[in-house]
Image (cartoon, rainbow over all chains, first blue to last red):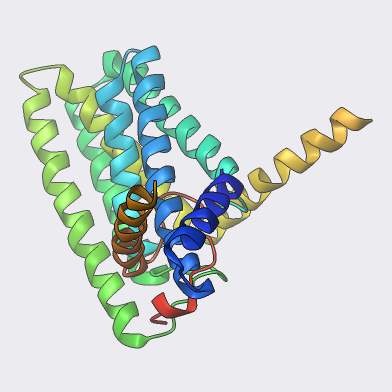
Length: 215
Length: 40
């Protein structure tokens, strides 16, 4: 995906007479647009396939908005990122459907308290989690990211409690609540050292599979 | 085609500036950020 986008950016730069830096900026923005569109559409399509399209979108947007403020562990290439992201959105959406029949209000409230308390602690302890391709060293930016993460998770918590309340009247909202909780839980995990190790192991999977296919 | 590329370049530049203000790209992949967008 990245190769195609860079080739397109190169064509745009040639046609518009842009220098190398402007071409890099166009490629950066173009890749963001393509990746956002592809991940969202695939999550929606596979969400339909498992009978939970809204849940898949809730997971997709809750993770990605949280990541914009908090950062987190990264994949080595855009295609693998797309596969992992779409797979998680679909699995979490399907899981919210499987878990809905087991839904009990006290258990859900206990899970909400546990996951959100962990999320707040992880934000306080680790956010922002930067990457070598986008280091964050500016103390003002670090403060802004941390504050943004706290505010966003507080907004998620308000939405979560609304889903819990509505879930007592309409079972549809129970699934929405579970998928939001799974989105917050996954993103919280990717902010921790354990999440980084897990994603690094996943990063090695394509290389391992390619090696196995050749032997 | 030149006009289309011009629009695409403008939209991509706006998106790049919007994405640059965040800690992360979208999901798990973060390409190298162009020097002119960096605000470490």
